[in-house]
Amino acid sequence: MSGHSKFANIRAKKEKNDAAKGKIYTIIGREIAIAVKEGGPDPNNNFKLKFVIQKAKAANMPNDTIERGIKKAAGGGDGADYQQLRYEGYGVGGVAIIVDALTDNKNRTAANVKSAFSKGNGSLGTPNSVSFMFDNKGQIIIDREEYEGTADDLMMIALDAGAEDIKEEDDSFEIITDPADFDAVREALDAAGVPVADASVAMIPQNTVSVTDEEMTKNLRRTLDLLDEDDDVQQYYTNWEEE
Image 1 (cartoon, rainbow, N blue to C red):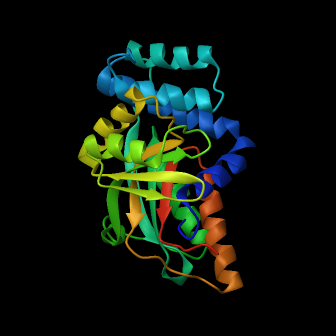
Image 2: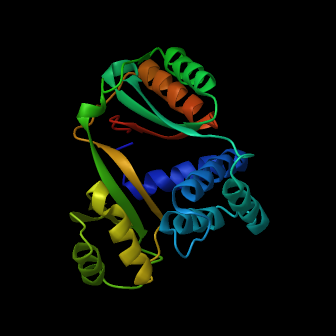
């Protein structure tokens, strides 16, 4: 997922997922449930929930669906008990893949993820089998077209709030933070009215792997497409340098 700007990857994935709104809404609904469970149902006092609501609205999720999700999560007993799980393994060509899932059925998710690796001729590994090749960082993407300030203004806001670095692309800015400072930087940007295109604590590859063989490329895409189609999969990370 390297080789192009992070923002280009976000747009490509959004276009792909626009045809499958059901998955997007499922993922966001589960994120709402987790946010409410961790910080309560009031977005004014729960910044994580506030951000998920913003994400939901950006995905055109209906307001009544958002409100029902919050009420259901706040009600406690009748909501599903979601687990956050991580799987690691290799695709063909030695490409490392990390899969983050949010599920109410661990056995179903494990079987689906294993199948996605197998169908692409990859192999699921043990915990920490590939994560040492990635850095865990907060990653905040700003769309240049949506941001009206200057690069210097953005740098000052982000660095003052604890950001480690800011990278400029033709179409975006990428702000990197330590995971511990991620919420503080995101809140500072929100307070300054900076529109955020995407924000998450992500696994960023230290180095990338290039795959030129056509059959290997097809197998890698098969694995990643199957992961994209799985409602339990929140996100995946690879060190594949896509051409």
